[in-house]
Length: 140
Ligand code: CMP
Image (cartoon, rainbow, N blue to C red):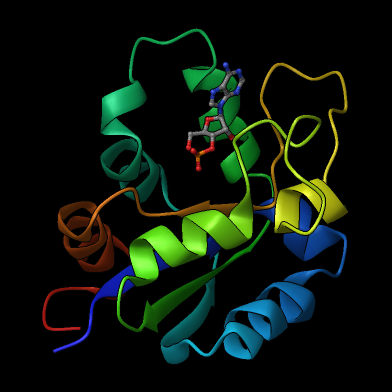
């Protein structure tokens, strides 16, 4: 069966009205939305989702930022979609992201303690499975 990735439109993306633009790019690329929900992330969800970043200087600001408003979580399917969505998203730092990407076209550095970079995308199929359980529950 085709691969899945877990995409989050972060609070900056939702606040700026970019949810539709992000989903449009995903669908225009040919990937399929198989799950979609808007949620206020709980501390438990964020601690689990960002466990690998615990202890890093941007961890506190990251969790605070991710709790600053609703996020839109999407489950996206297609062959090599993990790699494909990361290519659509661009690199972590919006300032350095290539034009043509979500972050390169729509993001920038706001001089804050955390990179507000509009979207998250899983870094592997294994991460996608783990993150899907966090945001959609077991059985998604
Ligand atoms: P993401 O890759 O989705 O998950 C970790 C997030 O932490 C990342 O997006 C950025 O929002 C943020 N981040 C990663 N590295 C840094 C950094 N060096 N400084 C500030 N924020 C960062």
